[in-house]
Image 1 (spheres, rainbow, N blue to C red):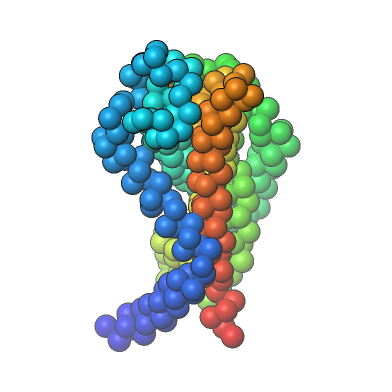
Image 2: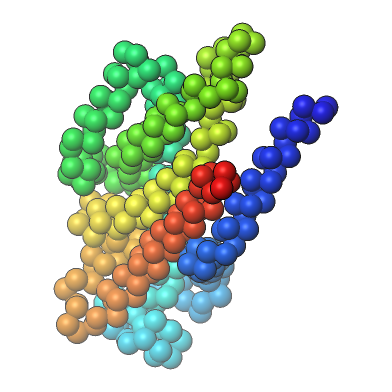
Length: 292
């Protein structure tokens, strides 16, 4: 009981200190607030609007923002832009979140095994990572999107398959720095298996960089979904996403600029907010400050 208490106290102290550092990071708090508000708006907002995202009012085509009940205006078919923006936000945020989960799981698995095992296993895995990174990710993404049937699930998988390599490199470097630490050597002397040491001892101590990388991966996944949807290879109408809203707005930039400005602003807010959160987490979880 005494050993557990002694080991747990520094961990709680570090966690509390990291939380305090994060709360002092104003941009991170701003980003977190914006993501919470944006998520709530996308989840609850469509139920509070007088129109749904598929309702067509031909008499209100190209209505500018703040026109009657159309707070953000309407699109070329007379559909309410606010309703479509919030429904598109559901799709884009879900794609970004689940792509982050998949890419983080794959990258973490590869990075932990490569970093701990080393030798030919680690070299083979990391050369595979280098091989994926040698291809421009956007071309690989577009090739997969063009070859496969586009759907939210498929787009999520495609983005994850082109995003896990950066996570793997970060985790591999962190695990290599931890595998010769005293607690790992103690685990080996106690006869613990390599799997136990990798995933029960080393991985929890490498969670800081993984969390930061995951946060930044969400922002990157939202941008990638918007990019391929803008080019017509991503989420297909009538299902809205921020990317295909931009795709449909490009021919009306002169006559109805709000069709592009509004979804573009939503993408900018989401991506910037996640980047702010990632910066705050990186500063808060920097263990070097705990040794000062």
